Amino acid sequence: MTPRARTAQAGPAADRNEVHLTGRVSGAPVERELPSGDTVVSFRVVVTRSPGRGSRRTGDRTRDRAGGRPQQDTLDVACWSARTRASALRLPDGQRVELQGTLRRRFYRTPAGPASRYEVHAVRLRRL
Image (spheres, rainbow, N blue to C red):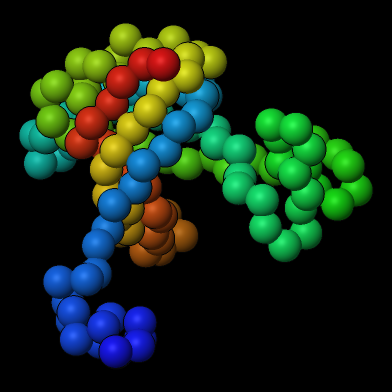
């Protein structure tokens, strides 16, 4: 059986939404109470991008073709459970962290109209 045939047979059970990141906290975590009464702690994590098209691997860093700075992505992280909220609030700016969670798209209203953004919902968080 070909790999493609195995994937087709696996069906929806093969679909997974799992995120595992290691990076540095950028800025102080912020705790907010939502209109629903729920509390969320959000912060940003900066991660170095894996090498791909348009980049080259130099030692332990990924750099763009021009040899400039390492390519990095800044990702929004939301902590909803009491445990992850408490852990996130103790993270100082620049702290290396490892987190696991899921990627979610959040919809909200702005003065300019409806908007959305992607964020990682952390279910496990630890300092490195």
